[in-house]
Image (cartoon, rainbow, N blue to C red):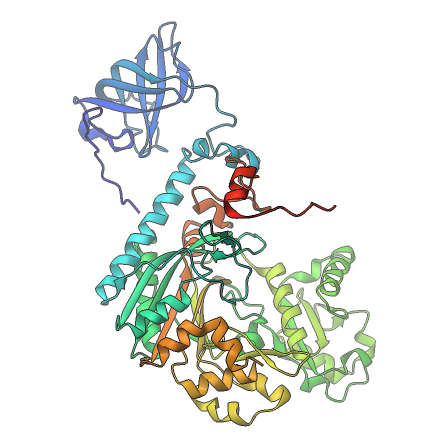
Length: 587
């Protein structure tokens, strides 16, 4: 990827440091940047590595003893070939150097709080406290420019498909979207609060009522959730909605944006993005966001043990995975992963090592029949030296436990195995039945049921609600959920039925969603939408394990900003203006 011009002439400089090549020999240049390092050549002569956003170039400077690391300088000199034997093949500018240099110091600098090269691991809090210095590193320069490339490609792709960019408000009414809101007190209406948007969901649906057939926005969203590698309080997403479309149309729109972004970064355009049902993903991978870069799929074994005498296998579901070459694992390690499974909520884990003659070595092998052991070898396609791992429990529990174990044992680093995009479709409409007997939605209550299951919605009872599919869909990349979307409910009768099933009466529905329901009374077109996280997409394309590495000024995992010391207290004057009083703090 090279989305930057090779020259950047201004009144202060003629070229970028990293743009100079052997074809520039003999040309006088003026460069500006930071002193990346200094090496003494003789009593009066020194080599200076000058760095700007484009890279490094070596400058030969007379009288450079006063130049220190990170000084900001302006260098004027002549491009010359390096002497034989001194070419640096690791630098794009490695064939040349700038000689006969004069140097103007534009700003002196104290020694940086950490090394500027990437070879040394630096504490993250220290990096974030001095983020403005950390941003100078090639890694951060590359990552943030990758992010800009992704944004630009997405915009071009959406606009080429007739989408119009519309900004939605940041100060809104609080709506129940699953996560906690960040709230902002109103000065003009003391005691009342705005919420910062968790997503533009309701506003983009209102755009459809307003006749904008195709809306998109690179939207900032905020959710007061615990932070982790793929989650920050504030994040950016591509948000899109379209009228008079089907689920497949949405896939076409989003595929174009995703493939354009990937091509802009990697130079290769991904092929068609496959689809997989939620049910298949859970059965084969134990996850609704399966990582397809490696095998170790979950294999169904329930019928194999239908008449077993082994009490631990008398369960609703039995599945297993094959860990290739895992038979070398020692007992301490096996006990460790067994403890992991128990800590995740499992009753235990059965392991079996495959011997050279394909017999199975396990503490529980004596409780299984020869037919069952032979069936395990056949079903799991076991080979000598493999390790077989089995779990017996309720089906959802088995899926979850083996899905987590599969990732723990087999998942490759984020920058290996290519980019495996996947659409997961046909999610359940409901997640569980609450204590009051009401089903709870897996997504939001505006998701249209699958057309084949609408009648079941009217007749189902109890656990049967969990069999109803929705027209909801997720986009997954290498085991990360990039985003979610759905076909929306635009029919009043279906919406009222959903609200009734959720235990939401007319008054509560009006109080929570009144402005959307009122708008639908005036003619809502069939519509569907989707949103995916730009932070997550960029991180994966850049080969980063944590989205903080592709965000200019992120928060730590504790939600703090070491640079600005946010969050911080505000003075009593501001509290008085807002009509607020702080409750006493308790330990």
